[in-house]
Image 1 (spheres, one colour):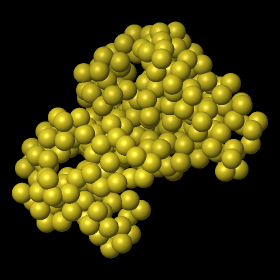
Image 2 (cartoon, one colour; image 1 turned 135 degrees about the horizontal axis):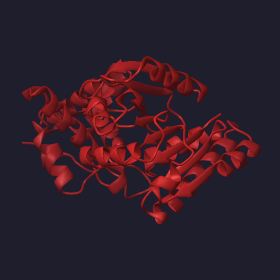
Image 3 (cartoon, one colour; image 1 turned 30 degrees about the horizontal axis):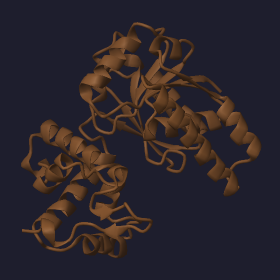
Image 4 (spheres, rainbow, N blue to C red; image 1 turned 120 degrees about the horizontal axis):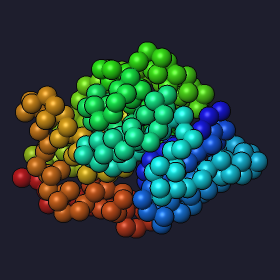
Length: 296
């Protein structure tokens, strides 16, 4: 299909690499940490094995997918032959600007530079390069191998040709791309994060408890997962980062993060990844962690 480089080997990065490799692309997975890359490959192998067990793919596709991935700790070497580069680093503006500035000096002008950012302005990221027409957002959803949506975000300078190509590439990956324009939070997180933030306020103000809030949204609104459990799954630090982008971008008090969310992130209670959040993930069964102790 094509040569792809994925920068960042965390949850999103390894998921994106998995999907491209599974669909026949040659993937260069890049990270500054070799240990992180080895961990990512192990995760990809486990997820591919799970797909084989569920008869989603064959053993042959699994093996070929793994062969399609190479790892690199050197950015210049890792992107040398890439036609599409997908940045999936931490949701930090200064880091993303540096990555795109570095990419601009080592890739040909024809390369498409995509960011998996969930909230940061594509126009602002593109300003770090000499070719903003080649910069676009490809916001995959977690878990990437399962979720169908790709939010394709056009920056102010993104060309029609690049947008069309990224939409076509997304479809070839078995995804459903949705084109949106550049604005804080885009569509997905502009709608989702205020809902999560409001659910946290409902808990903070003592209106109801964690399980009760999630139950109302699951049974009353047909959500597959309650907003507090979903926040744990996304990562409370990630939620806070996105809400801060919305707050700064729109300058409205309605986007101000709930003090409880800020406190939990400061305490290192980040959800599933820290095994503590609104629920307790330190045991085999998810147990309620927060009840009355955070109510006023």
